Length: 239
Image (cartoon, rainbow, N blue to C red; front, side, top):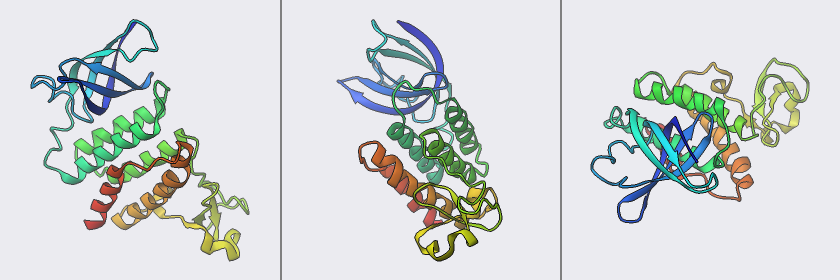
């Protein structure tokens, strides 16, 4: 068995004395693991940096085997943002969440395209924080926990949407909330595509973080959300 495809490197860990096991996110193959022989060498270490686009050639005797990768660099992102602490933290959060949530070898084309676009914005130093928030919403959607913010789940109205149900992830209007408003999550403008300031973005990430911790993590066996995301949010709060 063998195939070749371009993908995004989202994980690297040591394997033996000189090899590494890499995790690469592919458009048509999802998250796929494999061994890179000599991956800790001086020649390959700069190539095997998180967020880099790679041309990967996978080989194995049987399809279900771990297999091995030979890789070539297409685009380096880590080197571009090496001096940008926030961008590096964002990159680490993206990769760790993909590793944490995605099952192996399951197609997630929409998420792949959103990830690639976000990483391109991150390295070009555009206003990528709002894109990051949108990316977490797409991640939740792909995992089956998407937020439905189109109308109030109680009244059907699309006016005065100010809350989110922590159970369903649906929007709730002020009228629909009634006496239950204190039990609901706030609906930040940033989740509706309006808020552009840092406070709105952080509030939006607080909401997506709630669903990652209380919906996604339990569905994955009550594992803890990657610490890299927490460090990213902490850094945002200090800016």
